[in-house]
Image (cartoon, rainbow, N blue to C red; front, side, top):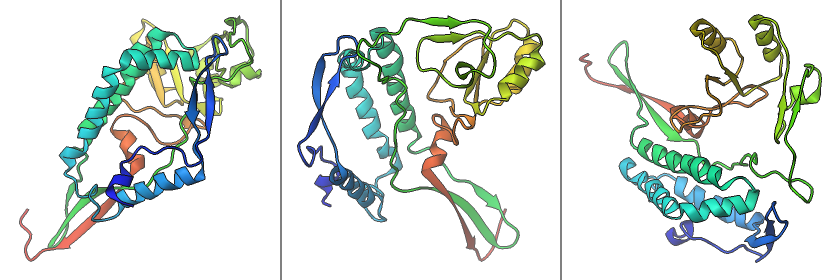
Length: 280
């Protein structure tokens, strides 16, 4: 592919579109381009061309690689009001959440990782004998992703669900074992801290947990005891581009966000060099 083709915004191969519908009214907002196998192949070819040794992208200075991400963040921020309104029309969430939470996190993530472009360093190691050893972080290659759809709920016409609270829920029922993507709260009773920890850890999932307490000893214990990738203490649903997020057990592998989020996209290579004389 030419350099122009690897940076182009292309129309779909077969010119087909599909409607996106407002969940609040059921009306069609717009028609969106529908990609197919040929479109995916073009994207893969462009990505693979950029991945090849000696390609223009592989030779770009690390400090310059963050610039496109900074630029994208600036463009998004310039259209923040429009994009928040579009997000609200598309999935029905409150405008204030789209504007203050979703788009805020988008901006922070782009700028955070733009800053990492020239800071993901290798290490050097003291070796026995006349050798010098160091590590490199190299790109794992072309990655294809299926993005979570948590905010795009598909429900029957009407799209409105009345909030519900279920009391005295037993551990064996579905709403106690599975995440409900809707305004549903479950209340489960317990007598001791050890009991609630054991019951929580009996789940096959382990994405996140939260505890509210004024007792620092309980906060310390309950931040360590749950088998979960995230534990919130006296807060809930707080995320940052700097902090890794991911789950234990069936809630997934690996982490996103923070420095840990880079690990899935790189391979660590060890290079050991014979030298004529070592001076530590």
